Image 1 (cartoon, one colour):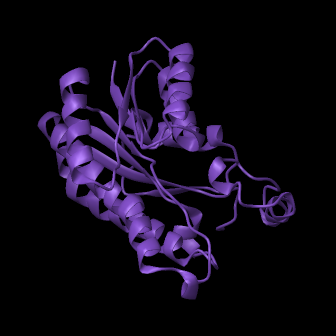
Image 2 (cartoon, rainbow, N blue to C red):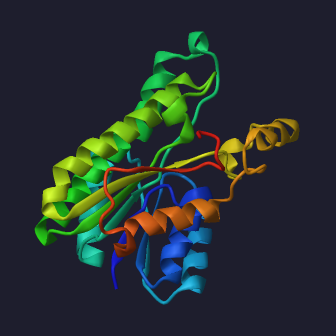
Amino acid sequence: MKNVLITGASGGIGRAAAVAFAAKGYHVAIHYRSDIEGAEKTRQRCKNAGKGRIFVFQGDVSKATDVSYMFDRIQAEMGGLDILINNAGISDFGLVQDTSEEDWDRLFAVNCKGVFLCSRAAALMMLKKKTGSIVNIGSMWGECGASCETAYSASKAAVSGFTKALAKELAPSGIRVNCVAPGLIDTGMNRRLTREELVSFAEDTPLGRIGTPEEVAKAIVFLAEEDSSFITGQVLAVDGGVTI
């Protein structure tokens, strides 16, 4: 069985991805920062879905010490890593003139620096085996930009650029790096939206609805597994056609 780590797996897309990998027989490492109850729910659902071992790790992906400690434990308890899913992320909504320097820095620390720190640690493990897969979670707003979400859009655009650059760097070592860019998905991150706003967005989506975490999880698993062995450096939109 292979080992997979999903960061930010206490709910939403991260939880759906963890359960999807568990159902396919993987040993799953669930990462969370503060929502221990959510992480426990994910662990239980993974346990119910598959027969692989389930591990839970806590930490802040924007802190090098936390990431280093987590990957040391992964090496010691799991024997290494085959797949990394960089899902941990935060959002922010507001006019650019109302965005503080602290808001901007925190978004980039989690959404970008966290991806860098975890990818760097995972690459060190994967390079020894000359194989591995990294899937970063971006956003459709990183591809086309969102009004009143400039910091978030910029941070996710950086994830797309990082994905393409790292894919070129690691490809000679047999390690693939791809990105999934979700559209509006039914997760806790979008609870700030009113029902009217959700309906309006669904009407503006070519497929006529918002997406589910499970639909994004299927794309993540596809890019992570050998079925996509000749795919690297790509950004796969799972957005109902919004960015067409």
